[in-house]
Length: 161
Image (cartoon, rainbow, N blue to C red; front, side):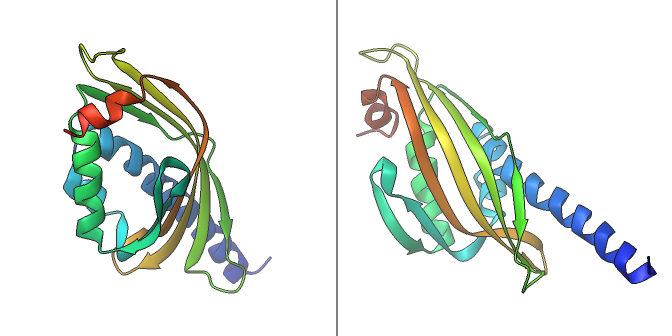
């Protein structure tokens, strides 16, 4: 075994951990309403495909996407997003690209909402990542909805609609 192959293997492990950290930061930044931290994990622009939830796939300037997320998620009394089961697949032709597949468990609570104060989304994400001078970033994000539970009307109420 050459030192280069050991070095490459160590780099791959470090990259995998950094990529998973980005996926986890996606979830925790939302919960903490840390919109600057949330912005820090995306490229500019970023491709977002939330078409299964009603937002057609499009390229967004990062700040526009962050504003959209802050408006839609900031009105909840509490949020808890859990990002488990990370599977990182590296692009074999480009060591600076990877996809992090992860599950989505997104709980939302809106105190005293008519029709119920709880809304839960379950599904997964495909996070296309690229290595930048500032670390790994999400360049394209696809959300897959498995199933929903609770008061879907609370979404509009939390967004102030």
